Image (cartoon, helix red, strand yellow):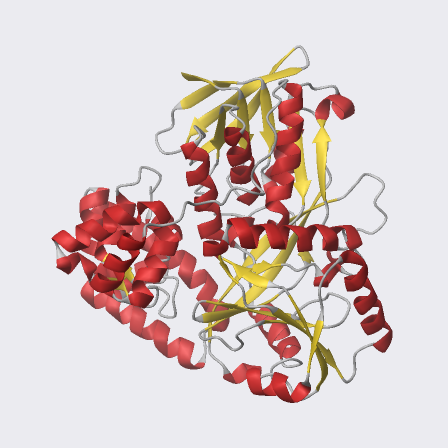
Length: 539
């Protein structure tokens, strides 16, 4: 058993977990983050990608609305490279409740959310697909956020201050001694090695798995696992976030991302924290609802369907147990006060938009327990330094402006290494993934990262296979590089089967029309070029 010493263990590699790691590290507190999969493999990558203005909660959840608008402003300052400042529209339809409209306007005013009405004629000109059933349109400062970029930016910032992490490392139990948590016992899933990690404090930031971690101390945490299903369309239907101006419900938000649009969501309580299955009923249900905002929505091509789990915190005396009725606020639980276990804190609920605030509150608690006087600086210090102009200019000369900008956003301060590689060997500037403009040099750079254990990890770091072809072309183009990195064809074939199975799960519920033809082409490519058998390619 390998032994590790640190001051704080953070369990969970989602946005909140890496935010906590960054905050603690900036305060000079040694911390180790443990994640059972890859970073962002859970809720932080399985959502619609909306950076909330708070408008969605302005009527029924004013605290969450106020937190969202304040964190919206902060993230636009510290994480601009992870965001697209699209703005958002709340669209009021003919049949919608006029009383709710007035309550919403009042709520936005009271929580500090700026609202501007857009004339209908201008709205239809700017967003041609918007339904003509709209009677009023209001603009708020919504934006879109790339969860992958945000997590990696936080992690790299944490590393600069001494923070450490290990992925594919599952916590098996808490190390309890006389009512005090002295660390954790964990297993390295990549090689089976057991770890004994000694620490003074353990932070439970495991999202949908938080209840399981808390149960290791004997405490029952009420986490409602609320599954939300979403659809991905193959183009930007809108250039702004489009919300329906009514009580928040299913199928009332369109979020543009890069070259696609994400539409959702649903709300269904599930038992398992990794229940990500979407079926044809979910797709049909969402399409019916979506036509309230986009007429003839079913005529547009859907790339895939996916789902994420909202870990909603329910206090023990909560009277409303429905997913839409549970507050989007977060809660910090000091286990010493509730179950007598010292040195353990759980952070529950919340939203990605408020991840930084959640991390600040946890880190304040940890610092107080450790008598560390350092204060939070995460709201002021950007996640990355200003990139050197000469590196950016050189990248644009080598691979073009659009590709260079995308690469620089993904790699940030590591971009110089990739740019120099392309300068030495121009062929490395060829695109492996044309949808996301990922070069050979970037793929090779990512494969050298010890955190990249699989093709799925590579996808999350580079966005390889996340564009409109859904990996039909780029994955097999990467084969020679993957063979060298993963040690031969047998391992590569295993990775392909795993990735294709995951992609297939998202494609199956939308397998008709153009998507059916695209899937048949992809299957033919893998069966002919890579000699896969039918049962392998179908997962």
